[in-house]
Image 1 (cartoon, rainbow, N blue to C red):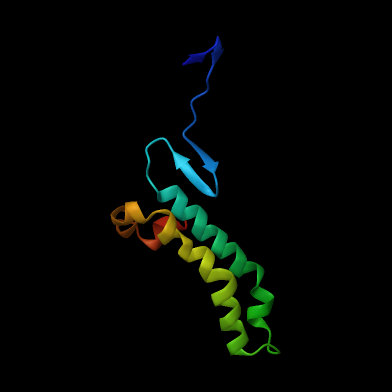
Image 2 (cartoon, rainbow, N blue to C red):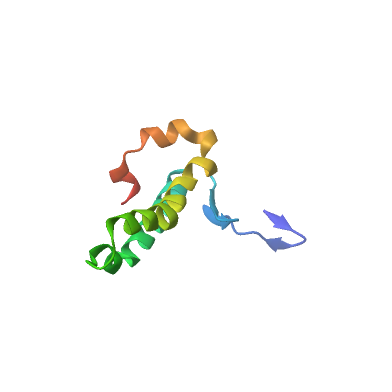
Length: 95
């Protein structure tokens, strides 16, 4: 495709406003990306999770405040493609 004599490059996906837009309009990559972000946050808190000086109650509050909002934003972003999300197993998402 050309616009004013310039060749446009076709790409398969790109980030846009925190989402991943793909040429086939499927949401697997979006789901994987979001879950990996939540996993990264949880992993960065590994010293906190292992600490004996922090109560379980505080750890749960940190989990609910820092990790769950990131992981559960999938529901808001890909709600129209919910059937597709249900077909995917968690093991497929974290490849």
